[in-house]
Image (cartoon, rainbow, N blue to C red; front, side, top):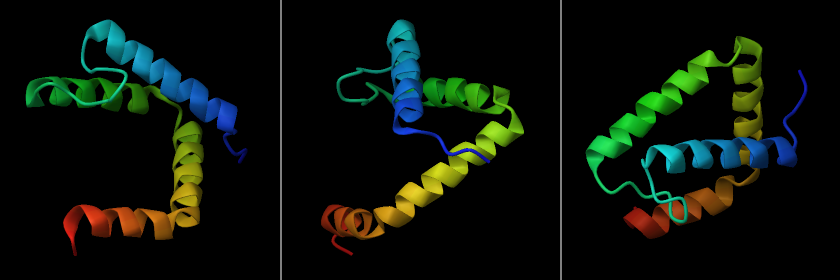
Length: 86
């Protein structure tokens, strides 16, 4: 299974942000939804886009995400600690 390149990831993020901006679902500069209704709508759109991908591509994306999370586990744990105090 081929890994996604940084360029692939950048292209995916740009595509999703453009779609959200076109629909008015989020402020692209922050990624923050103005209300829960828009967040839920965006999640439904994202789920549909995700399910439209072939299974092998979804496996590839998850494998890449898993790898990046492992590489950044310490930073993510620190950020979670700072946010929650736990």
